[in-house]
Amino acid sequence: LFGECGIPYLASAEGARLTLGVLALVLLAALLHASWNALVKVQGDRLLAMTLIAVSSSFFALIMIPFAPLPEPAAWPFLIATSFIHVGYMSFLILAYKHGDFGQVYPIARGTAPLLTTLLAIFFAAEIPTLGGWAAILLISGGIITLAIGQHGKFHAKPIFFALGTAVFIATYSVVDGVGARVAGSAHSYVLWVFFLHAIPLLCITLFRRRGAFVSLVKQQWKPGVLGGLMSLIAYWIVVWAWTTNQLGTVAALRETSVIFAALIATFYLKEPFGQRRILATIVVGIGVMFLSL
Image 1: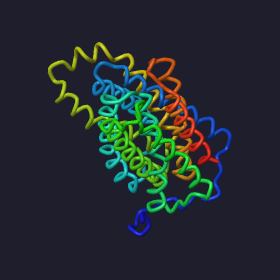
Image 2: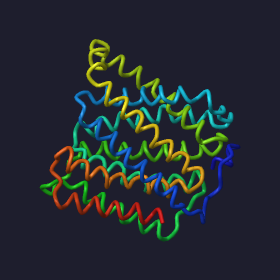
Image 3: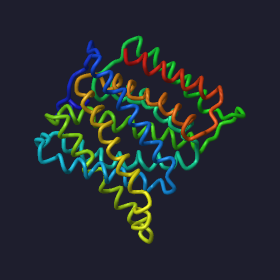
């Protein structure tokens, strides 16, 4: 579809295999992603926490932008679009954490995203998964259904709604950024501009919503914000680069092994209740995303 609109894109990466080095780097990105999400969950003001992470990562990106080439003109529509998509993602993620446990929200959002990313990649990047890939999607979906059921066998609609909404934004920015990085000429310059631009609208929203207490709140939460911003930048930098060499759905699926790290963080660090149902579901989702990456 991008080709029909006159926008160049990298054709299907069918047959491409993840090397051991790429595999290890994307797994590192998964760990970093789960870690900064946990930082957001434990902060008193999650909107501010997310904003500080975005602004910190934007600052780090700004320092490095002068040393990277400008993205090609064809990439700028993607950069502008992804700035607003990331704000939507962050907004839904904040609401999901407000209404649900980290150990419930994170696996649903991240586990559903590879399915949606793969479907979007079929239409917008001409990347069709293998038979094994579709089998993995069924595993992921089964795990998600189990995760959506609370400890008493009931659906908790609000956190699940926001978690699934988060997944829609994840899938959308995954395809936009994956294709955008391919047409940018340099994945490194593309991701730096992504992080520089996406903080601007979120900062404006936070300044408006927290205008009376912004400075005092920043003094309380700036340290985890800076740490989270650095982890966020490194994690997504790795993933965007990997998208330029492998199928979007494959990398997105491998990235979502972060659900395993999130489960461990939720259980051992956040001390959230994580019964047998959630443990089993998280394992199923983890197996699914690993199977999809093969």
